[in-house]
Amino acid sequence: MTSEQTQLIFELPAVLDLKAAAPLAERLRALRGAALSLDAGRVEWLGGQCLQVLLSAALSWRADGAALTLSGPSPAFCDGLRLLGVTPAELTGAEAEQ
View 1 (cartoon, rainbow, N blue to C red):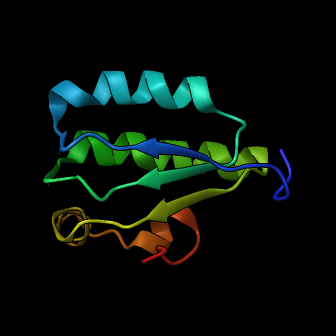
View 2: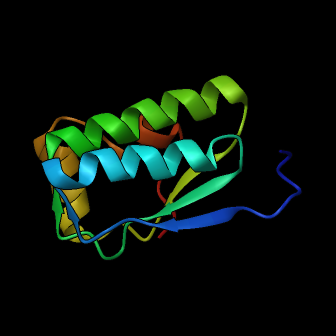
């Protein structure tokens, strides 16, 4: 998918914990190959398992040459990234859109 095509928006759930990891992975697999914006504005909790899913997705999108961006990350999402030692840029390869 080229950058000229519409970017899909995927709204991340408010709680990204162990229970959310498998459904998150399944949904992202279904969206693979599309230019995708991860809307993290509602996220209240980011756990390690979901971060692993998001990092895996980021690698898959890079391997496919598709755009993966992060939009409007909540303070809780940013805090979760920081606490787990990851920056938004490391997750998507670019700075988050505010």
